[in-house]
Structure formats: structure tokens, C-alpha cells
Length: 108
Image (cartoon, rainbow, N blue to C red):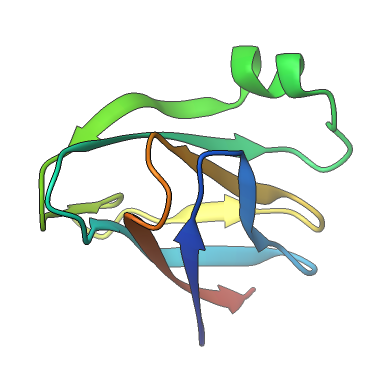
């Protein structure tokens, strides 16, 4: 298993790219600021690069508000996210340097 951590910005940022087939076993989004922050999360199939397509068809969380100093855990109850080679997880926040992510993943 591996862990990937990122700081999120106000532009859409790829925070994880699958190499071969992988499973994401844990994914958290933490607001480290003193104010609420909204985030959008996209799970994007390999080969889709057009931003309007990503926004319309790949969004899995839209305008999620995370309160000050709080964490949102993406999975619950043992759920997992299976990704193919080149699939990505992308995220955008409403504030700069306010959000961090942590992803645990393994190849299957």
C-alpha cells in the first residue's frame, strides 16, 4: 500500500493518477483553515482532458462545504474505489492553502 498527500488550490488539481489497476482504500479531505471551504471532487476516466466534460460527467462531490478544522472522509463502511490505468482523482477548493488530501491506494 502507498499513501499520497496533497495540498489543494483553487484550480483543478490532479491529486492521484492510477498506474495499472488500483484500489483507493482511504481518501480524506481536511480543511486546515479557520473558515469554511467548499470543494469539488472529480473521478476522471483515462483519456478525458476536456474540462467541461469533466465538470459535467465526472463530478462525485459538488460544492461540498467542509467547516473550519474539519475532515471529510470519502469512504465509509469498507467501500473502495477501483480505478483503471490512467484514471485520475482531481479536486478544486474555494480557497488557497486551506485543504489537504490523504489517499491510501494499492495495485490490484
